[in-house]
Amino acid sequence: MTGKTSAYTDRLSALLRERGMPPARVEELAGELAAYAAGAGSSLEEEFGPVAELADQLTRGEDADAVDEPGAGSDTWVWTADALQEVGLLARFGGQGWEAERLDRLGRFVCRRDREHPLRWAYRRETTGGPGRERLATEGWELFGTWGPFAYFKRSEAAVTGPAARLTAPPAPPRRRVYIAPWIFVTLAVAVVLAVATLLLGGFGAGLTDGATLAGALAGLAGGGLLGAWAWRSAARRHAG
Image (cartoon, rainbow, N blue to C red):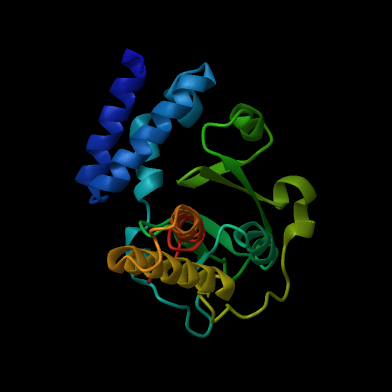
């Protein structure tokens, strides 16, 4: 990490902590920015602007964390999805006029929709620290949040289609807030059961004296652990609880 990068991330971390961001999230953001700077070939200030402005953007609207679901006519909505569905859902809700302002501390999308002049929004998900960030900025894409390996960008359709991006009769705010496929939880549950069963069999020595049986048990344990880890990364990282 260069001196300029370190100074930028240190100052950003201090500002975020002062504004109440959890230390774990501050550390995660600083690490992501440092990793991005290592491969970007340009300074963080060139990419993200002055450090104080970035801190403002990352901590803007903290009170929205307390919103559970929209009421009738509400223009605020917070939702979450597994990694396999969120890109399609962002496209759907963006077409309904929902602007994702940021990701909250739980990784949920904090969205708003202008009541009087709703506009369609487009979204992109890229890998954190991946190439093309500068190109996206020149095309009007704005980074609104990062979570794990992903960076999320938005762009008003008005930048491309002009007045055609205006919505005249947007649908009512969705009542649903969690979009996680049931099979993910089933996979996780099966993986945990397999892992526990294998450990119990090992503890009682039931049939594990045979080499082939022992190898099969170990394979089952490893497979269960891998399935559980994969399911957890896909679901629990965004599940609001």
